[in-house]
Length: 285
Image 1 (tube, rainbow, N blue to C red):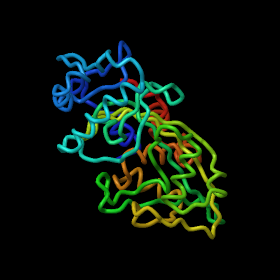
Image 2 (spheres, one colour):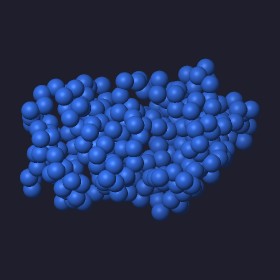
Image 3 (cartoon, rainbow, N blue to C red):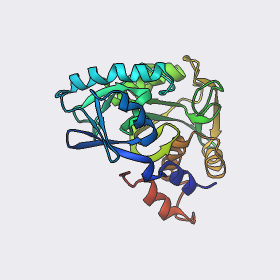
């Protein structure tokens, strides 16, 4: 395993597994062919052929599309095709600040291969020995990536809430960080990746923040999704990232970004230029 391996893993897909998904003439996603077969049962909502899938153009507005897709997704969940349910709505668009073409249940985003968004927070501590970082270990009963290491705080970006507002909310829910402290977080980077997962295509944008915490502060989980928080030197996190698969896949990208910004990964690393090139490339399929 290496830094480059993690970047490549998050950006690997087999194009012939997918068909494009359109609203009118705008492509909004890449849908797994095997999943698209289930949508043939809903011809009033989706039009499919061997080459593409389209939202029925009878639905003219975002609200109409949102109302049309909601019962379809719920039925697919009830029959086990969509394997989980978050009860959180995501905006479907090309870029974060655009008007949504419609909204949909978060658990279905990868199945349709539409762009998803999330916030990740690095919890950092300055000590006399150097920089330390708080790392979360996901609970073993999480449906995805159980027991894996994660950023101190991370969460998806639902519709109707700003990035900073969401980051503050997630900080309180996941790590008991008070709003007054979480508000000091600094936005530091945006990462894009595009890769095939077990549910379909992950075309994601991550908005990343750094928060410098007092030495006497220790995060506490309040939503039951974290087994423990671990404080480790930044160099230890770098070693784990470079040599193992201990971290959840996309968390490795956030780690690498942090290590580049802090000079832990620098020109002396044999893959430095390729790491930078691949990590910060905009993912397009």
